[in-house]
Image (tube, rainbow, N blue to C red; front, side, top):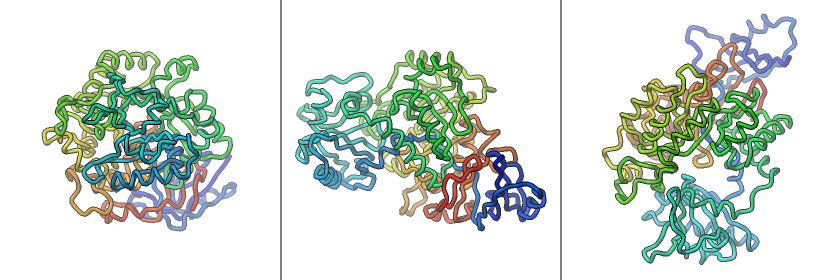
Length: 533
């Protein structure tokens, strides 16, 4: 038996009627008792246990990122990161510097550029990337991960010729002369991905470990992640998770399973909820559309700032319904990426045709929920459904997203407060590496609905959350979305000992700007210290 008495902490939302409650006793990864240090020591007389002193720090239920990509976040650490680039010139300068350090012929990869933050919204043309380097294939991923930029050498390596036609699930940008301008949308990116050298298995494992340790440092005890498309097989995912645990990594994962791997899932006989205390198998994930930034999110009506398109549906309605039917045959819930109101309505149709029992432990999951019509919300409220929201999308996407959708589609535009009021479970995530992994940046965004450093009432301020509500997205909400509300998400006897220990008090009356300064001093997962400052 492994036993630890954690003492002298200030417990999150501790009842005012129970002063002096500052300690938690843990056995074999679970909370066995909560009380004062003195009374717990008295109860533990004669027992052998370790003691960890929190020294007055503040103890939250373990924070969980309910939607991210561990492997990609780990790989990101070695790529060009354009998050803070403010112009296409700065972007080109960064590529030029990397080219000078990269042997000719090797790929230059970058991510997180956002032309909406650039002067006049300008992005590099393929010719401008060629002028920086024609000795390296250059492939740059937009912040949404649904649009890309590449130079001519990358097009050549991918085998994409000037006269290539668009497909229903992908397209290419062209300039006024009809030439490829370097933009690539959605599944048209596949030849470019396939042309790049694939990371070796040891590199992928190292990337996942690096990302997990970064998450622990930031105060996260777990991540709901989808890594199968990167790793290539369910077997590889299971092996990496088991090896990292055997090597001492104290971080927990909830694995969403990409629908392209259903045959392997069937062959392995894997069931939703199976796994261990350190990793669990979750819902099967599919994509219904793209992203609003690149105008590939599928809308019911054309984009207000580009009436020639409604975006891209990744599947026809019949295809979506068939996929959901196959998922149900396996006994799984569905986790569906749907950003546009058209995609959300198509998914509501598919779920309605193949309903999930309301008493099934693991809910379906609506990922992103950025643009939805009220009638679709009403349909979803009658389903066994959790809503995965990314609060940081608000400071990243406003105010330009309002030009995309116009004034008639704002009633459920990144409407976090309204989603909470539906009674559906709402879970918070970062979608890292698309947004920063730091959960306190997400909490700040949910509370203020503005960028750090801005001073206004927030974008659509009626959708602001309280600090307690925002913390709940990353604790109890994440547990509900994973079907684990009975064992995680709050500080309670009988639940797993997951703690995020921070350097200051989080409460509803605090200055929300202080959230930007919160620092994790310890992260405890299943009773084991995963990170200590």
